[in-house]
Image (tube, rainbow, N blue to C red):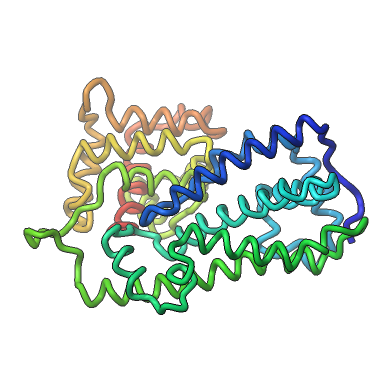
Length: 355
């Protein structure tokens, strides 16, 4: 049972939070109208925490008040999700129902983003997305509600109406609260999964996506760079096959290699990774890395320090690795070995995403 209130917000702070959420949710919901759009909710985390006055110790204390059998649930291991739930409870107790509902809606947007990365881990075709919307069953929520945005709004409104009484009492039943969160994600999951099934069926029927000139459509470099930096920096994805390959090719000690990848797999380094990926794409054609010989040639070009304007991928890679907690130790190692390691990791990681 949750009875304690872990937040303390004044009326003016509550009003500020409401305005902020109205703007953010409105912006993201409108953008979700576009085919293949993926909300980047991580960019709002710092500001949202600041507006709610949330610190990590409060999140830990809140989680400790949840029954042990629910604490280990995957959905409750994310501090961001827990903070949003804390905000929902606090604003509702302050009789700011609409603000609480906005937080529930923001959580839905966050879940939609993570589900999109799960079901469309490589690339998403705008045209195929539009085609799929017309091919799914007329009873599918995306089609019935005339788009993904309206479907999300519908799910939030219907579930909040059902579960709102859970937030009314002085004490909140853990089981019911967890169900309120899981039902939201489950409803969004069902819609995304059934949509993705039709999407990939259509993709198989069409074969590889072609342009009017029957030339295979290439994913934009900016999209690739954004996708890789999001996967590594925002979502902390670690590809073990790429890690093992990078360790083998560079001869670096395993514990060092693992520490480097764990170190850069943080949102703090997202923009650096994105910049490095753009430099790599200009060092050699990323579309050729599906062939190992071409990928290895690209690694050699990176290690040689090919300049792109006044920058080069090699120097930026070293800068990235030196900026991690392990940096002081890495500065005493051979630069070539470090660059070869990270080059192989990033190029092979990209290969798994686009090939």
